[in-house]
Length: 178
Ligand code: FEO
Picture 1 (cartoon, protein in one colour):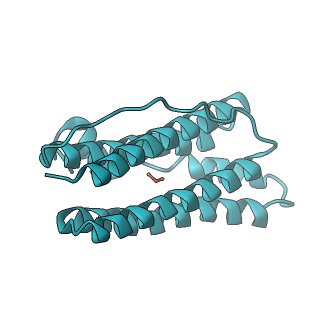
Picture 2: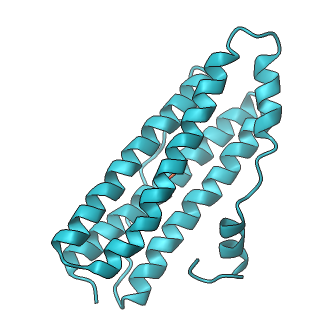
């Protein structure tokens, strides 16, 4: 059984993950309206990643006999000045999520909840990848800023992103609770 304080913090993190999905859905919509279909695809898959993260937290609370409490999701920004501004915002957001996960880990240690601490290790590692992915998009856009056709090329590359096997398994139920 989870202590109430930790359960509340996990529920707050579910809200953070669902907001992340909402934010990336807004970015997808912005890319669709710019007709940058590759970046729109990248964001579409990022939405699935975030829903997967939210599900993971929910499954953990259920397994521990706790209660999932869903709160209102705030409205995300809808427009950005450029693709670069969008990915910079995505990177800043991932850094914020990393801080949230680190604080959760600290709380789990303080509350002496080792199951929660071990569960959170997956997210600590995942955030390294999440930050690196968003930062990689920022760096590519900066590099190609002045290259003719650069944005078109990067958009095509982003269109090749495919769903991760873990996320796919979670959606299809092939690995419940994965
Ligand atoms: Fe759920 Fe992108 O962190």
